[in-house]
Length: 445
Image 1 (tube, helix red, strand yellow):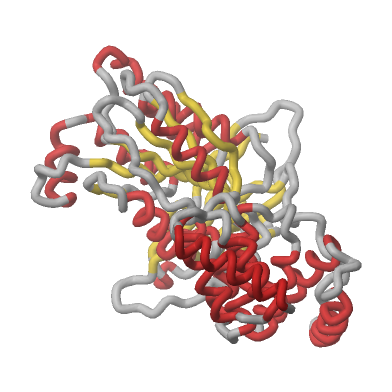
Image 2 (cartoon, helix red, strand yellow):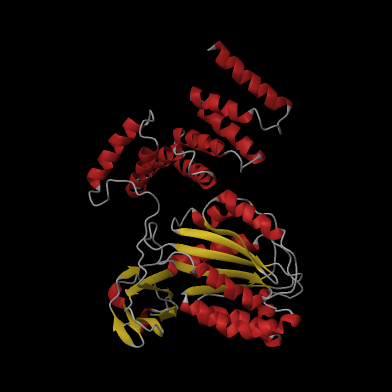
């Protein structure tokens, strides 16, 4: 006991001598965890993570344990999610913390999944017996849930399953009503099809994965995105949607992928930093978007895909032929079921983004084509003055206004010896329910 107290005293003294020296914080936090000094543990890990929130996932996990034992379950979940984002492989203990947190928040489904992940990774851990008992009680209440933990995210997918995404906006003054399968009709070339999959708006455990590609214009006319908090993606979107992953690309004359679809905070941070290093050359706008669509479509099947493009919407004069790629870009996106969300970055001398929209669309065909990609592919356009807050704001809008209202219908296509394009559409049976956006794509079979 004396050695334990002396060690804690030494670490505290080291921190007082050099508050910005990070080395003493983690061993002090581990001692405080062992002593059950939860308030001190939260304070120590808070101070440590203000110095470095990237390289110490264990600090996030210890912070989660402190908050959990103080009964602060929301804070415990946030801290455990941060540990998960940084390193989900080497710290499976986070699943135990998340499981108990979900139990206390009365989220049985999440608790079952998290306990299963924990027991699969650490079957002989000292906390495993208590978790097995709790899991058994939860499974009795939910006999329909599989008893074995999945090896990873499991989604319904079939190479012959054509997915069509759409959004439903209620008419002015009308309450949002949840759609049912009988409210829609799926047609291919005008012929009704039997819907085999139907996902309604916000769904915490969606069965359909969503891949969002962020595409940044790195030409000389666009200021590079500023330094970002590494958790901006989780705080704005990923914590709420477990079925979403993000890919990042930059482009000027050439398209460069800095990360494939991922949910890892450190990978996303490094990918954004890499965008800052890309050379500023002439803008090959529509060609880059077309290539990004094709690259994304080469991934797994049964995926909903969205591309968010950050650009001023202007192609370089010496790449004038790029404007002629606009039609092919739109058709390619429709064929692969990719919705495009153009973000038009406007100069600050405009009185407002609204004024910029009018002036720029009237005066530049390239910008008009760029914005038009949204309507042609079921996306949405934005006009924003470029600041460090643009990306977080767009991510938040996508989470709250787009993903929350994105519906997915799927049907099985017929195979053919000579594949050809078909027009697939989702229609509302009752037009009074609201305005349907998207709901159309080209399916080749």
